[in-house]
Amino acid sequence: MAITLTKLDQQVHSGPGGVEIAGFPQILHTRAFGHPDVLFVPLLEGAKEAATLCERLIAGGEAKDRAATMSGIQLVSGLLQESTFALSARGMLEEHHYFVDLAAGTLSVETRLYAEVSRRTSMIRVEIAGQFLEGIYVVRIVGDSSVTLQFDEEQLRQPAFFSTVLAERCLHLQAQRAQTRRAGASGDEEDISEVALTISLAKRKIPLVLKQKIANGEWEILEAQMRRRLGSLSPDAENNLRLLFAALSATLAGLAEAGAPKSPAPPSLVGAAKDSAGS
Image 1 (cartoon, rainbow, N blue to C red):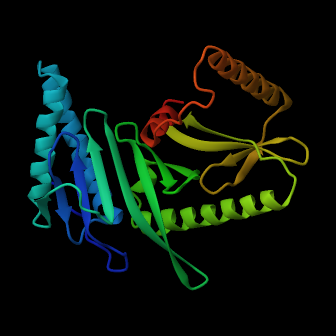
Image 2: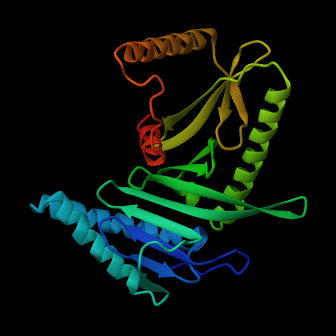
């Protein structure tokens, strides 16, 4: 299983990186090719090949855990064919840290992105995670769980996507959320209600946001990434949304009365991506 790294654009801020594969005792370290613009897509392709091998082994009667381990070893061997990779002990702090779980079908990376605004460069640390067979990935700014974006695999495959589109989008959204918090702290307005969802259309997953306007209570339909307004919900749709909120409130109240935690632990980032993909 040979993995060919794409050529690094000299304008991209690169750095060391490490790849951790579930069930493998060591990590694969690279000194110069850890940036997602270079490594994410080749690693994604390798993970898909390894997952296909894992499925074949299971179909042939191999136990799932053993099949995942054997497939993981093949992925490690493929990466080690590149002279830029070497085995290293766990515990090292990496600028770009990847994690592949073939049994769960997940790929994630915690990385640093750099974006320039007003002639100043800002560093943003993000976590990107998703189900690589589903092709939906959730992006979260580390340290600010309220800032979450969603992209499909096709978008992540764009050249220099991580260092340009994603970095600028994260910085813009982070600044927008900070401004909203400051405005909320200085006023008496209630929090703006938002609902994130994903619609399947013509074999594509389209992430959307429903946002309620404070002025008149109207629910707007926004494109999730750029927050572009697409329209508004009809009165019947708004009524159905209120019924959904009421049903969810009743369910949570019932769980609380039964002794369940009143504030259920939030799903993991990877779980959130999987749930969104299944919407």
